[in-house]
Length: 273
Figure 1 (cartoon, rainbow, N blue to C red):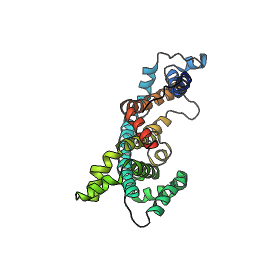
Figure 2: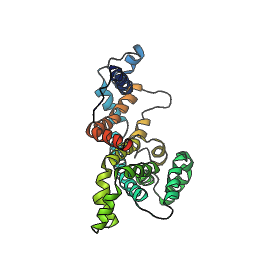
Figure 3: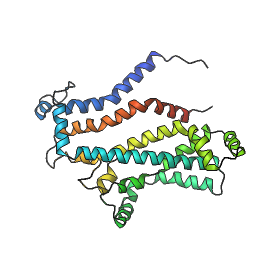
Figure 4: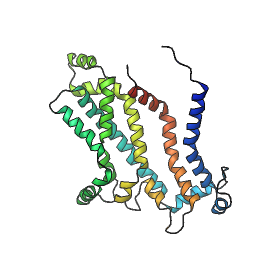
């Protein structure tokens, strides 16, 4: 297949998109590397100051930063792994197995995506209170173990990426449904599952609303802990944005390590044929 060379205009457009995407993080680093006086004196300067390490140290001592970092790593990793596994299982069932009510059940799962999260907060809080989980990480992890988008994504992905002939061949060889899933469907789903896992990890890492409601100030995730840097009548922006940069570093590492797999998953899931 002959590849079309991108025009200079396309490269210019991509460069503009790249700079626009990177600017908020750079701006956060610039403000986070200054003191309050320097921000007031020259608020529009894009040149970093020399106080980032000092401000980062203040962040670590002002809030339970390392505990919050560990909580976020634990919650995001467990949720991402669970969503990938359960969504791939459900996607395999919806895409390749034939059972009564399959289409209606899939429509119902997709329809739940239209329900705002805020509508379920009160009953969910009541359930967590009945279980005695208020303030615990389990109250954040368990409600997020699977989601409708993950099921929909893996259903669509496996429907295109996994030929029916492979499933039929595995059944002829005597493989059970679970064995077929593990040996045939899961390898085929790897690029799409990687994309889903990365986006789930990021969404869970940056989630603020539900953890802010259910967790105690002494046992927060990272976004909730960063909120504690804001005082009632005064906001030290250098301190807050230094914390934002520190919170973004693990996500940058994840993208640097798994970025190629992410792009592969998006392209293979979006374009078939």
